Each structure stands twice: as structure tokens, then as C-alpha cells.
Image (cartoon, rainbow, N blue to C red):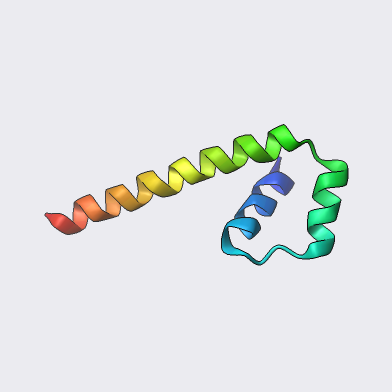
Length: 57
């Protein structure tokens, strides 16, 4: 699972290597990457909302 999280984080920042991407698609399941991406995306949005809320006080 850590490999999926690292891969999704690298993709978020745009630093995913082409070889790593090919490895992910050949060895990993797409559903794992999709779920991890959705969860991390929601966490990012909630974190930004929290920081904005604290800054507005």
C-alpha cells in the first residue's frame, strides 16, 4: 500500500518517472490508485479549507 501512496503523491506533484508509471500500471491494480487518489485529493481539499478557515480568523 505504501507503494501506491508514494506513486499517487509523486503524480500529484508531477514528478512521477515514466519507468515508475509503467511499473505501476503493469503491477498495480487501477482501483487501488483511483481510491488512493480520491482519498488524497479529499484530504488536500480539507487541509486547504482548514488552513483558510484558520487564516480568516
